[in-house]
Length: 335
Image (cartoon, rainbow, N blue to C red; front, side, top):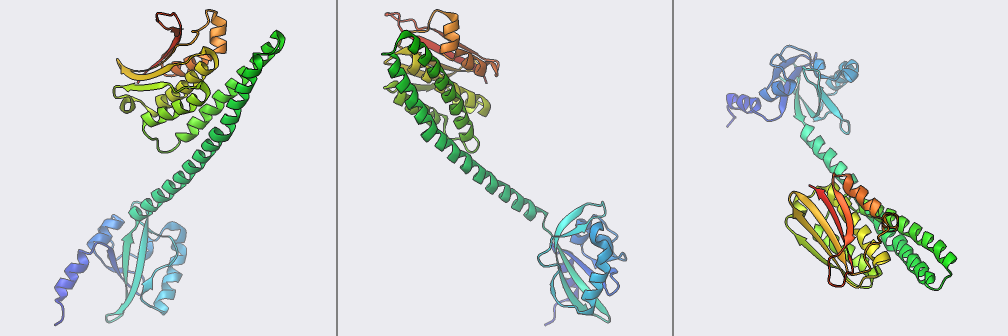
């Protein structure tokens, strides 16, 4: 039983891909609904198929079409090439084209045209995502190398120099203190670089990130500081504020290790009145009364600069306690 010709015509008319029937001279004798929609025209019949070819290759299309007409065969057009259809508004659309010859009194070519814009966009996004993942992996590898090798050596050098200060003369001790300050500064800079590299890709939970900072600081402190989070800290904080807050926490705990002579420290990060507040409390000797020593030797300027970049503040004060010992650093930034 032969299919109803009207049914076949209806099926081709409603096909999701564009369909053209072109005669041996390149004149379009039929175009289905999808083809009109793809070309943004309702007047394709009677025009030449060369008009749907991008300007850059239109001059060669007539000879290519003639070559196919001379030896017609069912096949994809331009296998391995990036093909495009020029819409009536002048925009080139990436397409796949298949050709199939048939005879009906004279020679015709059925041309099936498929818009592959979405596929190409998906491929582009996948390629970009793979490149980003490779970049993130490389940045994380560099960050790990800096942290596990360079920073640990710097920490060891700083501790060794500090141990030497105790038995050195006053003049030598003064020079060694300068060396220690330089090491502290380099550690701070490398630490910031490591953190920035680590945040290039996917970021884990804030609590785990802060716990890692505490674990790293405990190696230098000789004890493990306590850590507490209050309120929806992670959900309200931008990536930029988070980067500076964690870097400031590293800096603050490093200062406790270098200057406080403490046996206890506590870190709390909380949300207070639309502000992210980080406090680092210790039971050490407390901040010096001399302003120059406070700003220079304790890295307070760097911490204040990080907070000020977001309209925040950073203060270092004596802790209110029965024995009068300790300090409280408060780093606050609006979110």
